[in-house]
Length: 549
Image (tube, rainbow, N blue to C red):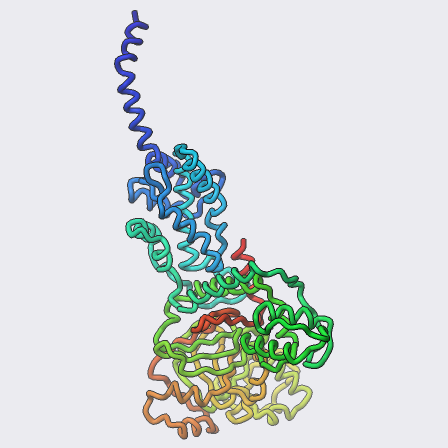
């Protein structure tokens, strides 16, 4: 009897169960998203198909705010926005980023499966739709973070990055919600780009290099030479050098009767290459020129990628109305006011073992006819040993010994062989002073400043990494005139007099001007022209390794 009742019960109520079950199936995607996210233990990353998602907190916040409704599919099919996001992930290579960091391989596999299902009129598996949903959202959040603040943490680099960390521009969950409402993934991701126009131009340079690489069939094994090659000379490397300059369009194709001879046509191509790469266009193929000629499209894409990352680290305050910008790798200072470059000058920067640091600080005063208070390390390692060899060294160099309170000390009363030296050595103002006739001060923990120099001929060198870390300026009088132009009474004549005093004169500026020292070995100028510079401090490789990791 019991079995008959049970069977009858099943016959009566089974349609109800089936209808209820059908309702469950209709809400499976939303429910599965909720269940997957609710099962994640706090502090642990979300794991999908043995892949850890990096943005678990953002994912949970985003989906909980939308009642766990799917974002990238509708009625079991992928939306146009899902395809747009995949396109943007692929395009991230033009930002110098790695699309594989944003699950591109597994996203492509899912898309291929779903497109095959559509072709064969098969429904998409709901579990796969949920997994793809989470991969796409994680990709959006991770790409947003990298476009906003960079992939690499500059504070962890071996080299110094003293510029304050960049704050997050926007809440990425809110950004994705906005992108979905507007139906615009790209436009919302572009909100995260650095505000400098050179960033978007840099993307176009990488795009062009990527296209150029598709027609590249050259062997880019580095060419090596024993000495500088000059026009008219013969060298076994000339045919390869000619071929590479033709590849880049610096010269046309032609038949050479003597392929190994450095002829006049190649000379013009080398000059063109040197001019576009910040070198002296003397036509001589030396160490720096050859280093540039050895770069393949892939090498230049990597260099550009490193510098796009550096741009992402810079705060938007670098776009302030008035700023002094020093690009260490380009050996140049630019004074920019209201987006116009008012003053530009060659500079000398630190030697490789006295590298000029990267940092920012406000310039607040100028010192005319300065003393050079010689740093203790230079005094210990260079000045004191010179005095031991030559007792007249101090007078010959216009130097004096003083206490730390500034009281003069008779050099003959000092035991120069003692282990300790409780004094300070300084060079008096004058034309032979190592700081020249003026210095520009932006107090910082590195004791770095901008100054004049008596060694004017050094500015003619191509490689100007020659100082102990400070920045020597080629045209300091003109720079002082510009900085003091809105301060009454500072005529050219008065500046000239101030620079030739026997005692220091400190002039406080009427405003603080941001000084930013950067290290860019690539940028795209206002015409979209690519500019590449030598990595004088060998810093690019570390960043490139971390970008590709």
